[in-house]
Length: 91
Image (tube, rainbow, N blue to C red; front, side, top):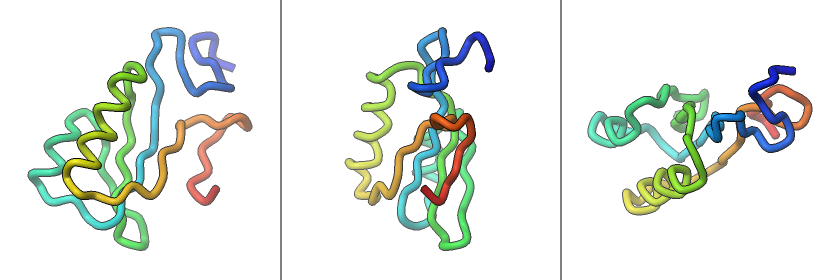
């Protein structure tokens, strides 16, 4: 295990954590710009997955607020590393 990463919490020792955030539908260019620093991809159901590092809980709540205020439907919020040490989008 990486010494800079706490596998149980998904947090690394710098306080940052990587998340996969799934929202319903495809983001337009303007909404995608709100999530600068995140990798924006689309799944087979045409939902958007945002992948990126979040520095702390306050930043995570800020991202969730952007999602809520834009009217997007949050489908899932998953730390990149789960307790088994790998991300499984189907959980």
